[in-house]
Amino acid sequence: PTGIQSQQVVINEINYNSHPDFNPEDWVEFYNPQSYEIDLSNWIFKDDDDLHQFIFPEGTSIEPNGYLVLCRNSDMFTALFPDVENYIGNMNFGLSGTGELLRLYDNTGILTDSVVYDDNDPWPEDPDGNGPTLELISPDLDNALAESWSSCQSHGTPGEANCYSGIRDISRNYDITVYPNPIQRTGILSIETDFNIQDMRVEIMNSEGKSLLYISDIYSDQIQFSRGSIPAGLYFCILYDKNNNPTAQTKFIVL
Image 1 (cartoon, helix red, strand yellow):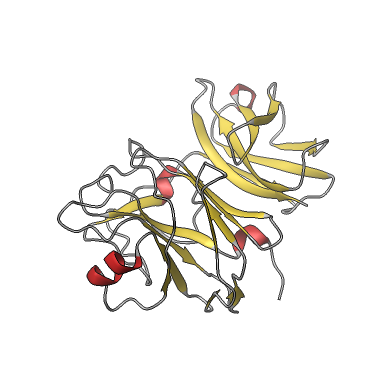
Image 2: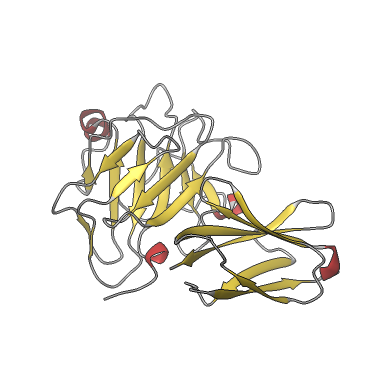
């Protein structure tokens, strides 16, 4: 089966700063939302340093609608989560306690998912050393948005469904989508808002936060754009309001 790569495996839960009384070391959980098994052999997980990478061993896979945990220290992880069997290790680098970029590449080098998490509002602050983990409220939400994340009021749920505690209100008066997704030569930005669309602006950024395209003077809720020299990969489209505050964000793929 084939599908949009960025929708195949989701960065679903992050333990980046454990409580000192319960420390399994850093770990990250991936979720497969598909109805078929996904082979992760030779996929690569990185943080924002290209020298920090974990290559998934041959034979690694995620079951349909299943989970896989990648931990930094298998001994410390299994000592505190002895019932979790769907894990791999050992990751030879840790996750930043102040937030950073996490990236997942498939075995062809295509970026399939990325998250830039933080430990300050609007991101949940409890996962920063207080015991809870950073969990997606639902794996079908856009994990690029802080409001899509919550904190599990325990020590996380590695290898199984998230607890979805402390669910935030994710309703808003703005939305932005890109279609077709993935795009090849041109795409359409579709904006939904209750406010004056002429006050908005749009920015397209790569996974490292570099701005590639800036659109202002918006007069239509359907904006056609050309990929131009943008290389293949995963990108973020951000909608800003008249006060230059980011109000909506989505991901799309360029083939």
